[in-house]
Length: 444
Image (cartoon, one colour):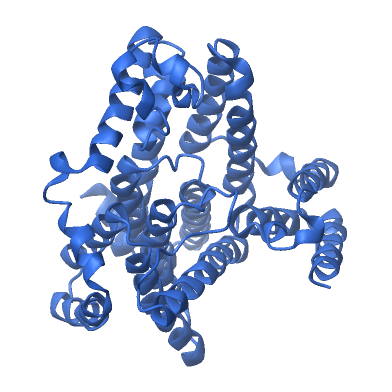
């Protein structure tokens, strides 16, 4: 029954996408973030995500939506990174092994580029933010209830055979989503929606603690600290976070405290030292292949790792870092493009937030810029310890920053055009024009 309902809904979405291409984008985002076909055993293995992607691309082509595409700095970097992934795959030292991950990453980047180009109005933008919060909120609510019912005795994990299956990946993904929940909390006008988002925020924190991931806990601390430092209402924020965090931490079992206590003694922890071994292997592979790298996730192969470091070859199970993953797979050039993408997105988000004082500024865009900065910082800190570079969530946030930046610029240009038309009409009637606050501030 569940399989039939899923297929019926997907078919309905595809039919709607033929008329409205953005419906296909939303369906694509739903499948990328939630992977509902993994929960329906009858359709498990069917390439529904590929069908949705193909139908969406066809709809964008036939509808002429592509004519509205405009190249921006973030989109250019996404395209550059996709191009370099292709170069790295061509020169991969084990093409058959890296091909699977190359295919997955390229498809993800295509989706992200489309989001950056099609989320070109407020409705589409908010729809995608809600889609991400709802999808990740499902995992958060489920994980929090699991933690409460089992008294925190077991790790919260994601669906099998997905990128968020690992408890560390799930914890950092949930921590990255926290700022978006707060963004929607401030945007929502209905009390019941605000109450639901506040409850989801608390459940997400419990689920993060329930993953028992040290990296996720550090990411949670970074979120709380950065949010507190940037907020003007520090006492209120401190009281609110304490009201949620303190009882949740007290609730956790003794083994949780023991695990978190190893953070201070990382050099003595076998798990952490295994990560260091993986970082060394990826660095040596990059030094051996500095331009194109060794190919995505080829460092996971013991025989390949043994070529550069025989002693650490047995530790070649994962890169345990988005940065070393990209470095070992795509070389120093690929890492430079990747870091430029993250930096460009952060600066664009900061620029959105800095405009909140301008008379023509969109308060919603400024607020998103503020919370997007926090989300990116949380991911960048948490991503230093996990191989989460192919997670759709943080790239979706980057795409939304790019889309909102273009929407904001279009709005400013429209306001400037209206101001110019008004000034011309007043002058034509023989009147005088006083400079606006915005023009005064721009000349100051």
